[in-house]
Length: 222
Ligand SMILES: [Zn+2]
Image (cartoon, rainbow, N blue to C red; front, side, top):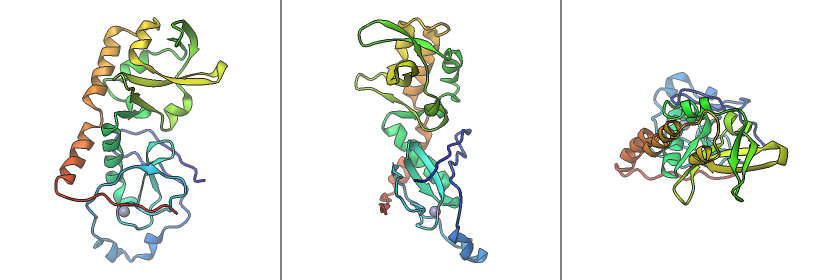
């Protein structure tokens, strides 16, 4: 299993990396590398387990794992990381998902997360208000996602370590549970940002490429 390291970034140059052991690009003379044409296509994130270190776009060696979820994303070479980030973000936009690590840095959502205590109460399915919940550390440091449930509510992953349970909870539940510091304004701003789509630009760029008639590629598992 490959060891993925996911880094926080400003949304423009996020490059989860793995240890590079070989680089076949080094076999290509420099003067030829400049003439290799970028392939204008789009890709869809897939499960990355057992996938070869091959760029989805140009099929050359690639060791950049651009993630859209845990062990899910697009593998890219050095030249195609921006396309991979664009297509991962477009996919997340189309499927109503947002990476938690992107959400906490977004101006519309950051105030909500900054105000959220390390542990807080939530409302259990029984209706009881229950203390001792938090945002899972792995969800923040890697690829946890906010997603829209069938009722149309944006839900954040939370966990209760003491009971080894996790779930998604709607933003409005933080108000219902009376979490200290969480106000109607903070929740409304967070929902508005999510509804507007923090990855909308990537989705629109991808749509413009699709409009030219380019067909998605089909990477092959090992
Ligand atoms: Zn490439």
